[in-house]
Image (cartoon, rainbow, N blue to C red; front, top):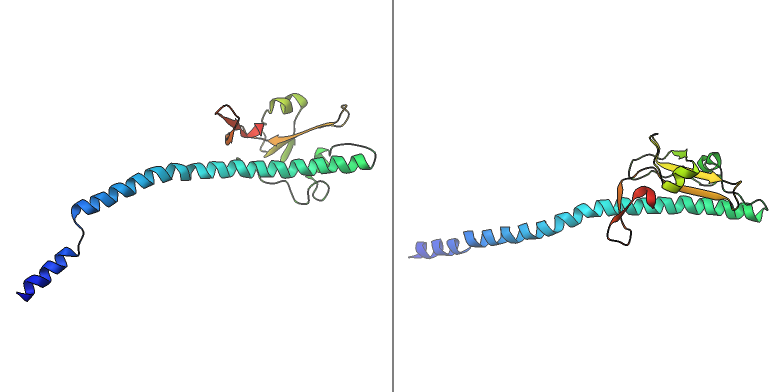
Length: 162
């Protein structure tokens, strides 16, 4: 009789097939909700990194303009000044998170207004015209990949429009 009781106690400690199926179903539902959210995190992180990089460079350009205005000759930095470490930026241009490049190439006014990308291997595009009244400088990403930044209409901005 003792052997029968011990066998029944061991059998009760195991999970039934129904309990195991219920756990698997719950895990499948949770992963079905969590995985799409996780995949969106990397896209949103890339968009945030791009916005941070653009903000840093644009702040440096604005600071250069403000300092030159105080000195009496308001002008934005040239492409050479922008890419020379220690003149506008204290470090090299940041890496564009969409294409992995940190080089800066020039753009024409028409290209800058349309945010046209260059076929050259470059992370950024820069247009400057200090002869205009007022002077103009436009710095943008050299990629037209879709970002995760909402444009207000429910669609997403492209990276070069940020």
